[in-house]
Image (cartoon, rainbow, N blue to C red):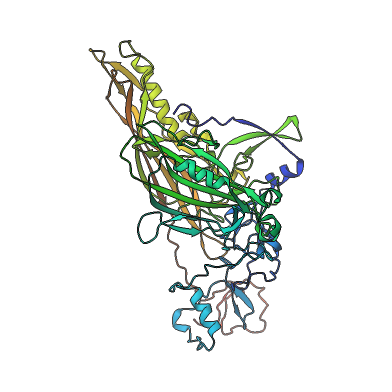
Length: 606
């Protein structure tokens, strides 16, 4: 684990003003009222500005990025009029049904099915048929527009083809993909604001990374069609860098990424070791109708110790990141609109102290989920090590995120390097404690295992600064001391009570929300462990291995709601004794002999 990832300081110095502090402490969430229609708008049409309303809940289920606009999310308050012009549809709008008699809106019909009548009308136009076909599965068109003309009269819209400039020629931005077999013999166009993935097999080439890097060195991403002057196509030097954007390439192993240049492309390696391309990832940064602002390219490589290697599996991934218009806010990926969505990461945070107006005397506590610069950094999600070739690997770029409501059991092998030579007499207890410390680091997120409660878990997928939205991890106490003992031959030693089996336990409930859906709320998170006695290791090996097991389990404790039926009305009313004078008896009115009315029973019968 040494050197895999850096520790996070407990104190972070940030300069913020009073308005930002007030915003954090208010812990309020801004939502918008749902539209009364879910009909998609045509490209380039005028979008009605959504009315904004302050509320304590957020029912915009497609809003999964904080402080940045979500594609095709019409209820996202971070999207303005210009952003919505590039949308092609509206996702997740709440449909309302108007009752003309009672004059109120309800988001769900509550009439039994037997009371519904046939209200479907016969389709009489092709527009109505197209409307149905677009919302259902259908056969794709076999005719493709392979000769699309570059149109510089409008900006990119969602799912539009992206253009690059290469060798004084405008071309589509494409990446390798499989065709009718598993090989990378096809190409797929990259679409605007659409995340894409591809897996395929290619023939091994020792100079593959070097050759691909040289290709992308001569490519320039067109920020927006309307920004490109056609005179720049033949002379790339005249094209501004904010219009013809160069690729920024990085070379990544399992632990770090370094800026790629001509000297570190691994084009010439030894005969025994071959560096091969395993993944190619694109990060495209944009801001809605303004187009692209930056593109990063990440070459993932691995060393292969086979001289007869012929084919290698490659992964291609395209990720779009929408940059917030407010530079003081860094976009945050959410795990739900209010509660957690299935298969979304568990959000974590640590308390840090921040300065107020550069004052060293005035410090306030805040959650680093809202103050860190990177979107979804490793320290803000719950994770466990990744199994790479059987080994436990954790770094800023290699890890497995714990996903909500996914029960997983993962195993891997931790290799511990002995710091003493085989002929030296070792302190077995110190070695065992060192091993245990490194095993803890896989699950404790840079904390000592006893202090893991300082890592806070968000109870919902859209966290706030309110401390009530964060809970502590509750670990099991370590009951037995970890000790080590040498065998008589001094060639082996035993670690007693070594902990290498961990289990995260998540307890949650489903609550009713304002839009008649179920909101998931985390109620508690526990971290249990089991012990193994008498684990024996051989000192003669420079590296000893320990098998690590990590499990996740989610428990739904939602109780079934009791159905209550309305009963007949019954009134108990106390009135003056002469209220009904001079009547002594009346239907529904009963008098006692002393003249006091005991009760009035309703004449209505159920």
